[in-house]
Image 1 (tube, rainbow, N blue to C red):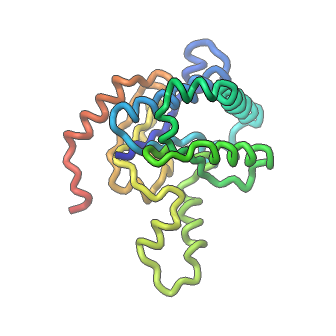
Image 2: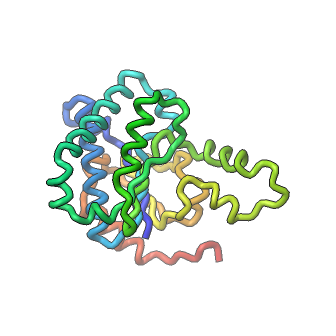
Length: 225
């Protein structure tokens, strides 16, 4: 099973609790790490999280972006320092294949280097964890068009092979109260079951996840038939 999540509401959670924005982003990252752990416990073998949209990166205040970078770097370095301890505590990490995808042309070399380091560290074969950063669904469609330009005949298999993430989510969860898809994986989510929650992402719990999976199993998915 493949579950995707749009973890919306980190900034609003920080404001709601009288905390600075960096604390909100930190809680968002830690909640996603827990989400991965819960997924494995609940029998989900692929997870996709939307870390940041391309539109957010282009339009968001530079100071906010620097805050996000600081939080990511702190979290990364903290886990590097505790790497042996973490792997002893969570041996299932050896089974995870974690990759970051997105449109990185606008990133500076230091940020791209960090993504390369992250992509090289967890290469297991049992569980897939995909993180989308600087992603935009329209840009992915444009990428496919460019990749396949000049081909005399284009099949659906050609389109799928040009996708960043080639598997289709069974479930998409969006927290934060917004009922919209925002261009999230428009091709892959064609027949996904969507769940929109009013809860802000740091408030999302394992019980919420269990209820979603239970609801999903009751739904009749006919895939257009």
